[in-house]
Amino acid sequence: MRYAYAITTAALLGGAAATLALQPAANAQTAQNEPGTIAAAAPKAGAPMSFADMVARLQPAVVNISTKQKVQVQTQANPFSQLFGFPDQGGGAPVTREGQSLGSGFLISPDGYIVTNAHVITAAQRGTIESITVTLSNRKEYTARVIGKDTASDLALLKVEAANLPFVKFGDSAKARVGDWVIAIGEPFGLGGTVTAGIVSALNRVTGPGAFDRFIQTDAAINKGNSGGPMFDLNGNVIGINSQIYSPSEGSVGIGFAIPAETAKPIIETMMKGGKLARGYLGIGPQPIDDDLAAGLGIPKDRGELIRSVEPNSPGQKAGLKTGDIVVAVNGEEVNSQQSLSYLIARVQPGNPAKLSVIRDGKPLTLTATVGTRPSEEELAGLAGGDDNGDDGDDGTPGVEQGGQRASTDQLGVQVLALTPTIANQLGIIPGSVTGVVVASVDPSSDAGQKVQRGDIISKVNGVAVKSPAEVAAQIRAAKAAGRNTVVVYLTRPRQGSLFVPIKFKG
Image (cartoon, rainbow, N blue to C red; front, side):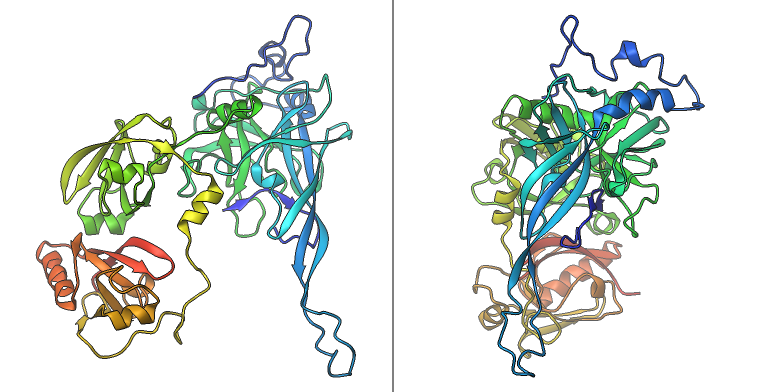
């Protein structure tokens, strides 16, 4: 998934629901999309002959957002310096260069509050934002300050000092239907105000594991630079904030995504009031259940999520959640491909209870958790830890000693060894901190060859703890006897983390 914001300088390589209290007073300026004023301009039912009158009213509220950044760039050493006896000029040291990023936004009040995407005003790696400039459709420029930025939802609120500005209001995205006409207005590739039209292609489209990765999908052309711009319905209401595109070419291929207004409104309102965003948190690592996992677990597809990890002393652990549990509902709302566990928990107010419907060892179970407060994205990254710099070994994986108790599990295409203290030390883990068997080799032609690698530690097979190759083989036989063609292993990859992996039998 790619963010839809434009980079115009080579120095950068990559931008509780309540309506906003913006009711106009007597004789005050009204929104560009005020129902009484937009009705005459809005196209009638059916395919419109033109959007021109409607766009003429809405476009003045859409702005261009540009940032100036200082970016640290690593330079290469001059290979000819020593060859020709020139003094060392410090080649290879980082240098600071200027860069610029472009995006879009829209005014939501006459006194200069502007909504955009958080990534539009986020510096590139090793960079800092020097200034943010907002340009209106009449080319008038303002310097903006950041009122709030929320990385989790990819929303930001800016403010410029001005009065009597054109603005628009949020609509109700919950009323949007697949097939409805929508209009996107933004500043793609820095070309200036650009209008595109299309339809709602899908609703509640999940693009990632995050709590806010649920979008309105559209075929209206959205390109780099459209990020932060509004998506309008035919009544002129903002029902989405254009945020991402799916594209192998970094250009529009008819698949764009917008943050729904029902998600954005309460977040933006909280920022406007100077409040702190608080979201529910359990301290667990959920894992979506794909078709292979469902087959291996013997459960229906698209139902629930696996718990692959539980943090010590977290709300999830205190509630009794365990690794391997399958959470199928939260407060009666089903966990599925359109409603992730993270999404449902994030909606619970911290301090409130969450009733969790769980399947453990094939049996239903109900647990109640007192939901905590979700840490910031930076704090969560610190909790995750890990080292992605690679491991030892000639094949990119940790070295594993030869010899010892070994079993060839031909049905899976892997060979495993008992996890001895010596092997644990070779893998860089504390002996006894993880139990199980270690993968010694993998058949690249098998399903395991695409999912498992040498040095992985398998702790469970089909929910049963294993500590020897013989115990692994026993669980494979049990799965085949039950008529399954897949087993689910719980594995730990040193310095990267743990997850459940479905592996199909060979043949």
